[in-house]
Length: 79
Image (tube, rainbow, N blue to C red):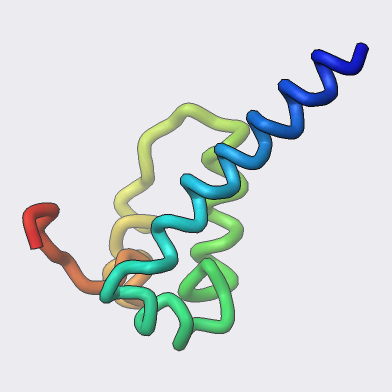
């Protein structure tokens, strides 16, 4: 029982440390300036709906995403 608890705490600590590493980059100010993970309520509904469905976005959803700027600015992974 103790080994399992120690392993669980160590694993959780490692996952938390890796997750927080993403907060230390130069783009942190962009994320900090947002008060929400989602751009709009429509974006949140879309994301939750897609968790339970495996369908592709409809043309209407794609148009709405572009209009509401759901995806933010594009950047290359090398920068």
